[in-house]
Image 1 (tube, rainbow, N blue to C red):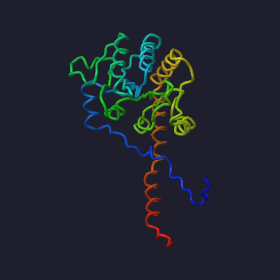
Image 2: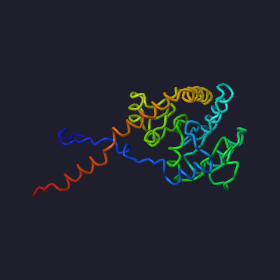
Image 3: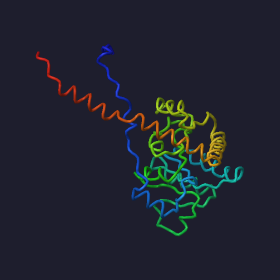
Image 4: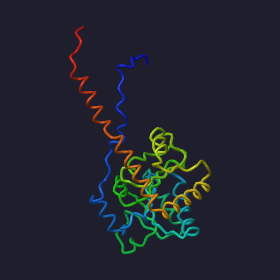
Length: 244
């Protein structure tokens, strides 16, 4: 744009400063008790999913049980509320035992294999309960969603191939081996690969923990952009005005 480089300051991405719900949050505790989510290593969260991704994840879960003898539980959180019904139909068609967040509490909640988070504004409370998080919008060709919230919670993060909405952030995490990114492919190929990746993470707690630790550390290392931006703005606003 013709601005002198000496007048340009890069403060970083303020997305890294987004907070995450602490493990002792009241809503997190409520979810843990109601659904008996006491073991993060046995819970997978599919966050911000789009059309077809629920089926991809559900097929991966079934494949995981059939081919690898793992039976983790799954929380599915669709990105858009208007898709709650569609996601519920996909879960029902899977044949897996399931329930929803908005259903009246029931004793069977603790045994549900799949939980549909059909509510708004509660996703952050689930992150501390899951050790593995798949971030949606990345198998569907929508460009992906923010991986920083689950990373800040120390989860092992998986994303699909389509992450152009967060290109720089994802590339930073890939270089640091702090995220697993699936290869390009059809839904069936993505489901098979996701199942394989999940089986490897479930079988290797050290690898799972290492991924989560690297992701959380990367978030912490890149925090501070908000404060730096405010400092820069303050210095501009406080500078004496030039007389015309």
